[in-house]
Each structure stands twice: as C-alpha cells, then as structure tokens.
Length: 508
Image 1 (cartoon, one colour):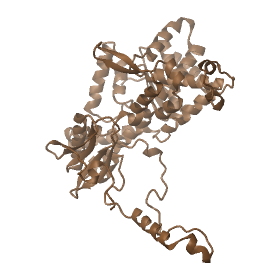
Image 2 (tube, rainbow, N blue to C red):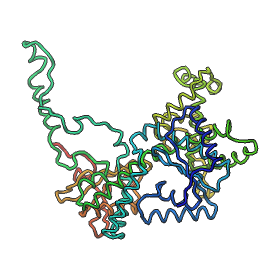
Image 3 (cartoon, helix red, strand yellow):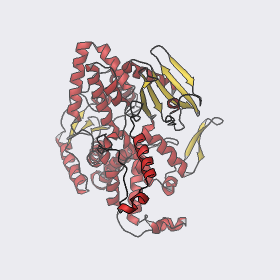
Image 4 (cartoon, one colour):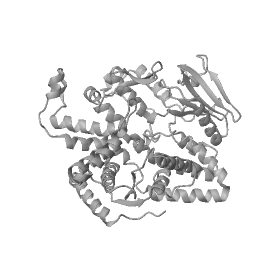
C-alpha cells in the first residue's frame, strides 16, 4: 500500500479544524490522517478498517463488491476512521479540497464520540496492534495446518459471531453473583426480646423460610445453571476444540465484541459527526465558492427514501431537536402539562441549555435509549416518520399508519439486539446425551430457517454432537435439530418435557 501523510495544505486545514473542534468542546484522541487512492480505500474498508487483519475469502468478496460499486458510480467511500488511540483516518486522494475539509471535520466528531461515549469505554484502544497480532497468529496456523482447514473453521465462527452477549461487558457483577457468597443457610431474624422472640420470629415461619432458602441454593440440574447468552464464549470454554481452534475462536470473539459499540450507536455516532461537520463547515471552513459543492454532497449524505431510515439524517435531526428543546426549555412538568399544540410550538423560556444537553446525551446514550427517550410525537411529525407497507395492488410502498408510537416501536424493535435473534445455551447435556440445546427468545419474529440451519451446522462443527434450537414459527413451537447428517424439524406440543418449551421444570 502507498499510504502517505497529508500534503501541507491539508495539514494546515487539519490544524484549523482541530482548533475549532477544541473550541467547541470536542475532546478527541490524537488523530492521524493518511492519504489513499480509491482501490486502497476499498481494500481497507473490506477489512473493516484494519489493513493488517487476518486473510480470509470474505474480505476479498467485500473488496470486489466495493470496487464494482465504485466503478459503476453506485457508491463512494469518502472517509474511514478507526476507534483507536491514536485514531486513524483515511482520506481519498481524488476528493476535492471541499470534501477533504468536510471529511476531516466529520472525523473529529467521530473521534470525540469514540473517546467520550460510555458504550465505547470498554473497547480496546490499541486494537490496531491487536488486529495485527491476530493476523500474524492466524497466518501461522494457516502455514501449519493448511489454509483450507483454518478458513473452514473461521467460516463457522463468522456464521456465529452475532451470538454474543452485547451487554455483558457493561455489567459489574458482585461476588455473590459470581458464586463467591459464603451463605450458611441461616434465615434472617427480626430483633426481639427473648420473651417476644417466638412471636416475632415464629418457629414454623423460620422453618418454612429455611426450606425455601435450601431449595433456592440447590444446585441446578442443568448445565449451564443459567442460560448463556454468549454462545461463542460458552463454546470457547466447553466445546472439544483443539488449542489452535480455541485461540482462533478467542481472537475472533474479541474482535466481535470490539465492533459491538459501533452497532449499538450507529445512529448517534453518525448524527454527532454530521452535526459537527455541518457546524464547522457552514460557520468557518467553507469559502463562498465552495458552498454549492458542500451543500450538494451534504444533502446526498442526508438523503432518504420512504420506508428506509438514514442513520445520518435521523441522528443529526434528533440531536438538533434535543438542542432546540433544551434551548427553549421544552422539558419538565410545565411544558408537559401543555395540551394545546400552538402553545407547545410557541413555548420558549430561553434557558439556553441545548449545547450542554447534547454533550450529555453523547456521553451516556446508545441508539435504543436515544430513540426511546427523545423521539416524540412532534419530532415524528416534523420528520414525516410513518409506518410504511407494500401495496400489492399498486406495486408501491405507502403510508399505512401515522401513529408515532408505532413508528417508534418498529424502530426500537429493529435496533434491539441489532435486529438479530436472541439465542442462548440452556442445556449442554440435553437428555443426558451430551447434546447441546439452544433456545430462541421469540418475540414475534420467526427465524429464517435457512440461516438457522447453517447456524446449527456451524455450532455442530465445534460441539461435534447433535445440536437443537427451540423456536416458534407463527406462534407454534418448533424444534430444529442437526445431528451431523441432516436438519430435522419437529413440532412441539404441551406434552413435551419442560425444557423443550423453554420453561422451568416443575418443582413438584
């Protein structure tokens, strides 16, 4: 690759943009820009932003798709920035000076978000080095065991890399939660005088509570004792893998967790970057002769069509709406009590808290909480957010519902768990045969059976014994099984055992 540092003119603009960002309160890691041509940009993007990553055919396919899309004028990557310390960003040599300034301002918005958003706080800030180390080790395994064998194992991991627990890194467990409690089984007693103790703490009540405590502390008959959301982590610890397979699985699992915050904050992150590039470009960086070019490219970034959500557009408009509401004082009980639409529209107490509020939101929120807390009826109406459906008679997508609550519900549903099914390990010794039993937390959306079958095959490749997944299809219980030869489907009935319907065993 022929990446180069910035020419002097862009170095001057970077210094200016960095100074502006600091003046506005942005706080980013040191940011290193490198110039690449379109072919190098497509290659880096295919590798997820890490050019030293391990080799795999999937990255080659993504590179071919990006290259063809660029060649035919269907898409163009203007920038690429990596969550790292320091942050690395890539600029396309062919971009105009206007575009380069826009992209650098956009990058500083991203870098501030990476550094200060809570959901990025658990990520490895030296991931560029980690990815390079992973690439070296995997290349070594390919040399030792053969490219085909290692690639086949990586294929299996790639088909499972969404089966992790995205919130596990943010949960601080107590010693009791981790099984370190030294409870002796004593029932707590109310303090009382000796002569009143039998009335305050009746012996029959104490015995009943002691039995309940013993039942709760009784070891679970299932392994794992609680459903394991992190299926990759469970396989890493319990599947009969060779050492090199354990190492490869551990590396790719670590990479999967690294990319989680980017999926959790796509709307916010892009909206924040657009907010700042538009602020800096419109107020400071655009020369008069650059305005039309800037507006043309900026509008292309924010363009959207009915039935589709543009994260850049939704994110920046919601940040601007929050800023406007907190500048005017449109929050709190006085504003909420207003019922007249005109009064709510004219409400303005000039409190000027908008900029402070959006920095607070940037620090604490992810996309789900961002949408849940701040998307309201007025915003949905202003942005024309409706529920769309396909009309078979006209062959077009049309508005089917204008209720903003349904719009919000549909949007939140698509963001929850990134739109992926929630799968957990509930039993690693199903029917005492060492078979693996998975449970799909069905919430009204059926599994795609073709993809589910591939998932079972990939899990089986690691577990080596039959694998089951319980799910529902149109509300009816289904059990999918792969035994190494074929996929089998079975309809579940109320007479099936308790585990097979995703319920706790009957304690009677």
